[in-house]
Length: 131
Ligand SMILES: [Zn+2]
Image (cartoon, rainbow, N blue to C red):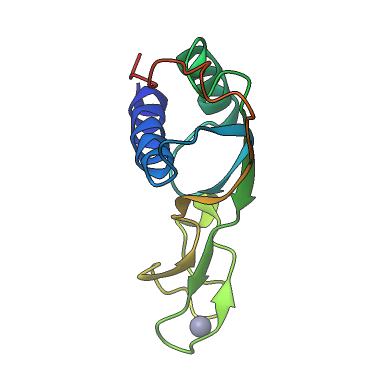
């Protein structure tokens, strides 16, 4: 369910991005998405829902490439960064402090889009709509 919502957000972003190029229609080959490991997004599931959602749209064939971003916390006591471990309740290994500051791992953003412009603007396809 979460991934369906995510895909909907991505499609909205992509449609906005496309509007910046009008009247030309970019042919997208790959969308690079940064996904933090603390976002509860299943990359495989997200790729799957994306593939289904873009079928028969202007994004048909565009591949979603997930770039995982590891969870990194910063210890509030000694300022050290560390890899929080769920089995340790995300506490810092140095001072056993609860995780209060997250340096990375919550990312969910389009880093870049690989695209080219088609020479045939006439073959316009309908805008991507949420599944
Ligand atoms: Zn510490």
